[in-house]
Image (cartoon, rainbow, N blue to C red; front, side):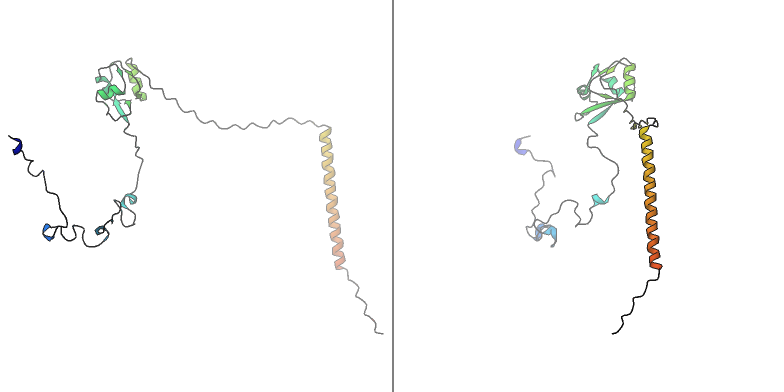
Length: 217
């Protein structure tokens, strides 16, 4: 074998397609663009998925649920995965070195799956409730905080108005007298108004004297 005899594999190098180089080339005249139309013009291009202004397919299809962009940042770790790691102190770097979690993972969480029979110490790794119990049952430990239940919202208590027992005194008796006088005044005013109305009606019903005719001189 010599350098001047080396050749690329058969079919790996293909000649470049030269459009609009005559009818005999197979792509002559219009150069593969067809006759007229928007795509035949220079600059006649719309974004991918454009359908002439009608509602595009990606907007016509229904959407369901929610896809979190960070769902792959936290990797799941089984108890059986912790069993096969040789080191006793396990953190995120140790999981990546053992190939348990991918290199792109930004965090990890231990779930209940498999069995753990040896003592391990977790650092910087989240654990579920069942996984915490399984780790502590074999003498292991974890620095993940224990989730505290959220306090229930208490209803707002409106302080009741303190009602002092009122004793009859001078002020109350005076107020009662004033209220009685006001009532009598209002009654008298109402009677006066009704009497004035009766008088006005009586005046209207009485026959009025006719004016005397002027005598001719």
